[in-house]
Amino acid sequence: MTFLLPFRCLLLVGGLLLAGCGTGRNAFTQSGQASYYADKFKGKKTASGSTYRPSKRTAAHNTLPFGTIVRVTNPRNHQSVKVKITDRGPHAKGRVIDLSRKAARKIGLVQAGVAPVQLKVVRAAR
Image (cartoon, rainbow, N blue to C red; front, side):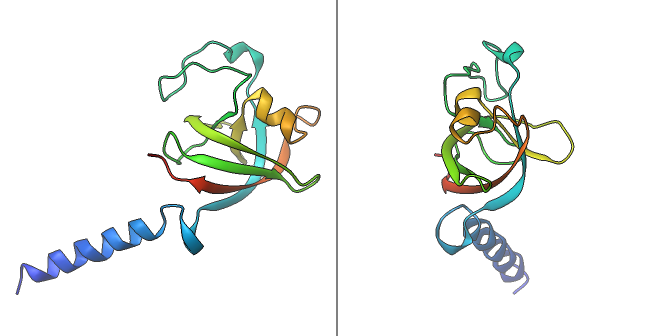
């Protein structure tokens, strides 16, 4: 009987983790401010080990696993872009995501520099 209690707790915790993996009704969403990478980071290694290229649709997020695909929408103009999480950040207070230059341009963020966005995971990391 004492063995079953920890096993049941493990099943409960595992089930809760699976429920939040970015599929179905429990998909991860987040709102906040977005910015984009400065040009000085071109060619530098990201936290995932890949090289940052401004011409790719990539992003940095503090907690989502590398390889996660996220739809980023600018609610001011309703433009959206899908990006792949390849780095950690942003490291500025109040920001939820840093976008590559190409992704930022797609949603009209380059002129503003910082803008409100809504994030939604569309595919969990593989």
